[in-house]
Image (cartoon, helix red, strand yellow):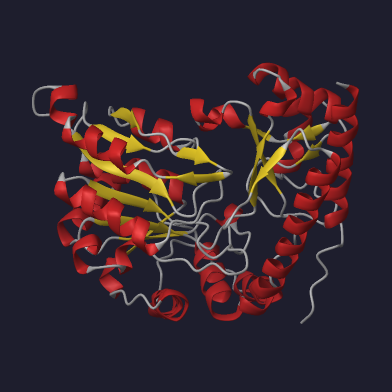
Length: 398
């Protein structure tokens, strides 16, 4: 089946957070929303058909994943990443973000530290603080348009954690994402090995958010953290979901892979009575996506590559004061706007009111994101072109 991703759909008044909230969020009625990680593409037809078939069965009671759902997950991880998992490792949650809250609470006590590597997905911050833990920031290093992990800084922070916190508290976990949101950096095997060895040496678990792992640009391949070794698997919690890859966020379905039995039991104990199971339509959509969604996904990835190429050429040629940080994964593009000479609030007002484009402010991803903006390019190319034209005109008026 050939999909038409150039077609612009009217998503207003469809209870879409991305479109319905945009006018009030950005203070502009005709703003083009390019902020939250939500594709403006219709989902794969096999997913639609699977949901329609299930909706025709007039019983919507409590649900749990059947064997075929778990089998679809196991088969996909083996096929996509050569990662063999066991059925009992799989825990289902209604989203990755609530799972992060549970994961942190299952591994820590109030007062412990959690390492974050800013700029990083902003819900990571409240996931740490709401658990009574402390954020230990180890900023990524940006050099020549490429982000790298600061391993020396990570090592020193973990080594000094007992002295930093005092008493029994220390750094208990490293929370990171791969590909990195918002900078689009895909961490390779050697980088993950170095991270994992540092974590093991200092008794820190690794919570790896890999929700964007199937949205990769040409030439890149994802390595699940827990697939590298049995030691890494036993020291990790890996968070996955079809929600970004197949645009299913509204169905609230995620799979949390926890090979370590003790860690898994602790996770299940903490989530009990707080975090419900996903709804039945989430299970249906996940299985359909993993079994029958690749034809659609291949076309989406090709289209996203075209959008990225268009964006990079346009910005380089017509808006040179803004720099595109070349991404390796995700459809979220990190724009270096420091060349505009605006502080964070002025940059926010500029994009909202002057350009009338709704982007995600870089500073919400941590202080290291000051002067940056995050743009979602998972949209018809005509919308992307209009947004870039608006930004170009606004920059020219500065």
